[in-house]
Image (cartoon, rainbow, N blue to C red; front, side, top):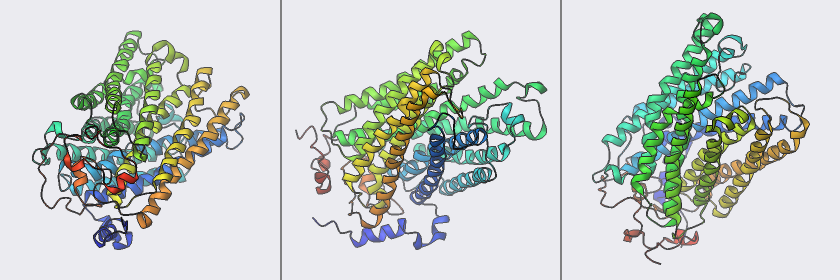
Length: 559
């Protein structure tokens, strides 16, 4: 079968992927798919900027004496790494890129509810990012990404106010995106697309959007108060002026723990799509997985105090927050058990997206289980502010959110670009990334348990072996991140044509050409089937030739 792209495919690729088609048309576009690609370019830049800071951190920790940079510079490096990665990559990556591109397609809409607001969100995001970039180039910031007071509001001599202003501006992008998603999902679903026919990807973005809208104003106001105290010497958090530094921690973590689920919930949605498609099986317990998404969003607002077990809060409050922290693990476990039940007796394929989906499950389970350690009062006192926390955080955020993001990119890349990437190289990159990640961060659990504090410029010599292992793993991890960027760019010009549904999958997005036309659907589709119903979809009974090459197995019905 010829893989040469048709004239129609070439035309669409020129319209969507060729910048020479007209920069002005891109910068003024209201097409949700183009805006998603603009976000893709932006978050990729910030990802590699944050990655540079991470490389410098690991190189400095290669030796116990921290020979690469001074202590003051090291403080700036881990601060800028956290600020860039969290606020400008992890939070927006899946919702702004994949959510923007896919939600209208998945629900049968022609665009988001507010297209101009969608474009404004991208501009606000980049405006905030440029302000933070100015702060970095002007000397950086050394408060940690948490901006703990009174150091951030009184004592730091770095660019705190400008960094806060950049994050404040970017926060409006999150709020507007969340509002746009909520209104779109409520009002623009195709006929027959009931709430319990929605793809789980849409459910998780709906839950994430609730956190965007309800939580982001809290962190915005909190950081604005830090800037006001710093500029006008107010007594809000500064105890010398009658303020309370613990008030900042309560306000900050009230948003920042739900923000963890902003990063992870969309990755869970991606993983659900991958597991069902590549197991060729209907999702086990659809309604429970959907309800678990909302439960995570709601309970996530009630657990912020577990960050403050050693900060002086009452023992009774600590016990309640510990209990609630265990409670939020239940809906997460529901998802993991349902994914596992879906895989049971499925016709599992080892295509690249599935490798990322399985990798997400493994790393998320490790991160989740170690989170239960931190929810236990006695254990948390021992490992608080050690590298155990660093490892746990990265297993959730990097191992979870980034694996989900890359899994989604690989899964929907044929739809986005109209082209296929080299499958063998992509599988190799997924395996390299998984090995590199575990080699980087698993030793940090041991370091933290042995007592190595995080954020320290130097450390005792007995910790060097584990730190060398972690730095070596980071170099492997970097290769795993660079490879996809290289072959995605290659595939845009040289990859074989993908066709509308190369896997094949059940969602509405796969009924459109690849890449989709500006209006998505010539006629609004009518949904008459249940989600992920592979056995009862005769149009998906036999894999396409492209899928056959990828060794996708038959559906359970065929077996």
